[in-house]
Image (cartoon, rainbow, N blue to C red; front, side):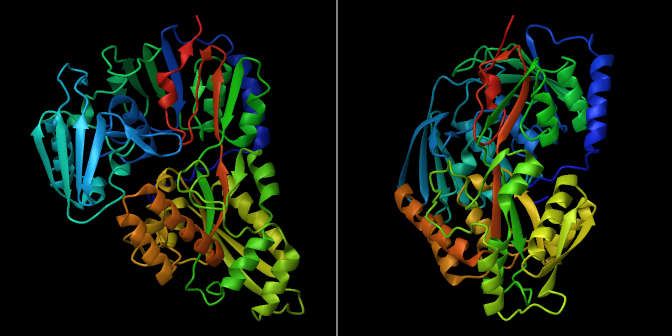
Length: 518
């Protein structure tokens, strides 16, 4: 899959889910509960690789954030704040000088120094590991460690994404000498230490009582792998699991679980973006007036309500509203079929005798809610004379067509990738066509290219904010995407879990503050 993107597998019919929930709740009502010192969280899949230099899947990155420390940290508005680096200077756009805390130790007792950070970066960059992250740090020309508490990064050219790529989720510091087999028994400096992993079964973590920061409240965390969503709901209802994290249960399941007095549903605005992309090489969709007409013809609110239980907010940018670079000063497209019809008429697409102006083909995966979304779009677009044909494919086939540009329109989600303004380069710059990056609609605008290049080389955050505001305005006008909605973070947990604090990215940081009622 592409950077930060996710689609879930097929789910079973609603009536069957409800039947299974009721049946199994009674069968397992006397199931063994977790002990008073262990929190059990159920996740969808095993982490692919717990070496933070290698793992790029969602589970690896989220678990790694608990085991490893980054150099800098992202706050709730995605500003970069001190962490292992207690301060830094940027004497020129190609030089970053980091000054480290002196009280950080790895789980085996070794002090964390500049040598470890240099090793972490050098082994990612020099080809000694097989990792997709090599290109992330391609502009780092040299790493110096003049003393234990100082790291200097020399860049080949300015790169304002550097700090983001040294933050939690993207970067984790490993001890000097860590080799290719490090993922088998990873040693970090984070709030939890690695205990064991059983592939496709569980990952066990233990509280790091020597942590330099705020200590976790719980002693052990057992991350149990349960691929099936219905089974995850059952585990919560029978009391054999404490938490199901955001994104792991469908909206109708969450609606059912809300009525269970033993469970609590926490909901907070999140950053995951559902979007729809147009192929701008298509003879119909290359016309901006057609794309704008489509935006006016789509009524997003009822789709969010009926398909996803109002677990989200309508979107008007790729960046989430919590982000420091987000701008709402853009063109908005409220549902207006009259305006859509007028634009299509003026674009030279009159209705035929059958009322149809033209046909469009939307490709989807076989995932249930994606196909339902396409079906609703089909009904809405017919009202303005557009016949939407739908073709559903197994995910690998669907995604292969997306990468090859063999589509007119499709829908996917950004998960994490839209939390840094470099998403604009990755998804909209004319140099980012596949297979290099994710400008899969082949959008070209020289003004956008110029602004993105300027934003990537400007260090001052206020100036960058102004640049990216212009980028968002142009994208809202040109509409290479229709931004649909941002999904909320929705976590379901047992009553014994207390003090759970969600954050916008939907990661597992809440495990450092939760408590278990005795």
